[in-house]
Image (tube, rainbow, N blue to C red):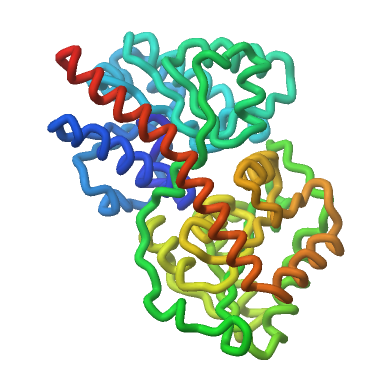
Length: 391
């Protein structure tokens, strides 16, 4: 499982890892075999491997390890019967730093050097802002047995790049992330009772003053937008506001949602801030207990939509509009083209008719679960083929 990790401070990466492991395991177990997962990615300070119920180990991916054919990383590649590469969900693009993109490219080449089949699990493909990045992307895409796009713009781009015959459209695997539902949620009245609202504030967007090396360009004043949303919610008589950090990176200030949430709680003392989550399923279970959720970390918003919580994605890249638009969900805000006023107007419209928003959330989740079957059927075929070939 390349670019998966149970040690990443970004719970979105964790959601992809846990969910994809479960999906692959289900296919393997249908053959009467058991899966063993070698997770290859970036090591962080967390450990939520307890959320995967199968044998796993972890190897760090870095330039030195890639350059050394005798490294633990290359030994891990050689132990694999098949490699599923999820690219961290959205890192197969040059939207972030050039160093990050080159590491993504080099890892795919290294994996194929050992002759192991490579599958690109559901992810965002692109955008690619330079001709060089585009050419490198095409080169490694052609190394893959199959490529899964999690949204229609990514799938269309694969066609433009000449990869249509070896690609399929599905959705994000995190729609299959397990969670515990709130038994009291259905009994609450959105029309007259208390409303539990959650807000994920992205430190990556809030701390643009110290973020470096990416291509993210916002059209909104994000701190002012956050203030506007929080002020609306804390001053509404029936609303209980929860801050929900989804990246817990204490060593990286411009990425740490939790430290930012603590600062915001100091300014808005009535808000509720839960303890740091121990893993992505725990975070999703918390979000599942809310009635309304807005957020800028995409997997926090997927956790909401896939657990029946009405959601307002506050997106900063094509991955948001692509994913939610592909599901027919029209409540996404694009913080790279819209104004604060437009986003706040949409937020007010959602608050005015939460039952309608819930209905649309349920419809989008149903569409996502249907699209995920494309990937699940592929996994069934791959597992059966490996066994038939005597692996």
